[in-house]
Amino acid sequence: MTEELTGIPGVHLWYTPVKYARLVVLKHKHKLVNWPAHIPFDDISRIKGGNRVLQTLLDLWKAGTLRFEPATRRDLRDARADPVRVHP
Image (tube, rainbow, N blue to C red; front, side, top):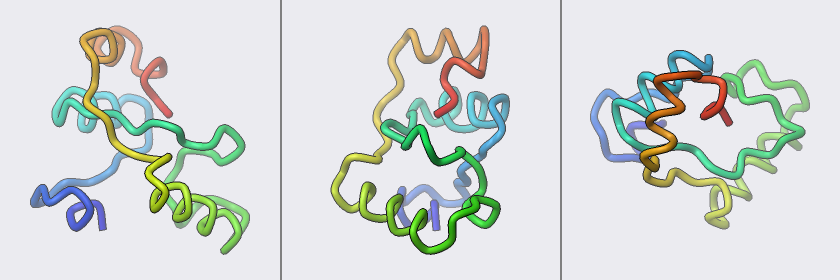
């Protein structure tokens, strides 16, 4: 699904702070913004709450609220120094 959304062959969205920082922020130089604070950033199959939570994420994505943005220089520095700082 991530490959279809981004158009980047073989791309995946990683959820652990270290992998997200290394394989999303540093490698692709993008970050996911506006992930809702009340929904844990985790593999969709592991998020509790069923369809309601998935619909919330889908609605935010379709509205353009939840989106990928280019990482700033600070984001890249933070990703190297402390991956938790760039984790949604």
